[in-house]
Image (cartoon, rainbow, N blue to C red; front, side, top):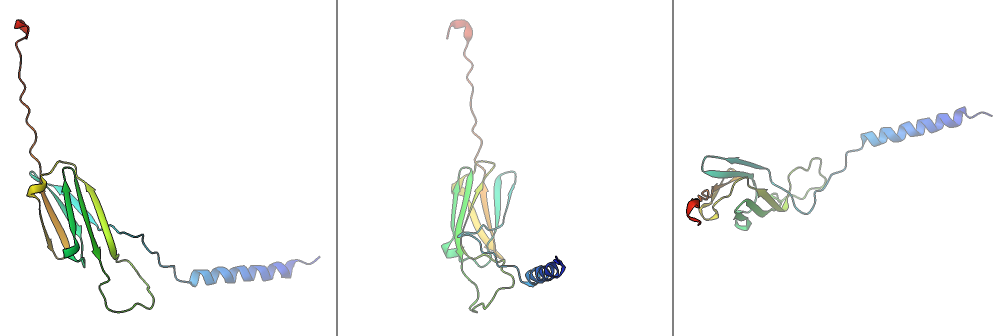
Length: 145
């Protein structure tokens, strides 16, 4: 019984299949319905500051919600070119709706929050809420009350 040529043909076909697979481009991976902009969050002596990367975002549709210990930023980035892509080779810039919820490590005062944007970076400055000061009353234990 001669099985050599059969296995030889099979080996060649398997090699040819894997070589073709390696030469094909990787498939484009599409993100879910929302994306998350990059954020830096830091603290100064009197405020929390969030820097949010938002190049190409329509600022008129931007929502910023500041709560006691949280910041929520919502918006949308539309496609920024009038050209119709025939095929993508690299696709790294997200578009469509986004939302980013950021827990804050300190309580902030929403009323004093200020936001501005420069070179596609949104800066949200949130003053820290003043610490609650509690006065302790010491009762005289010797008089029963």
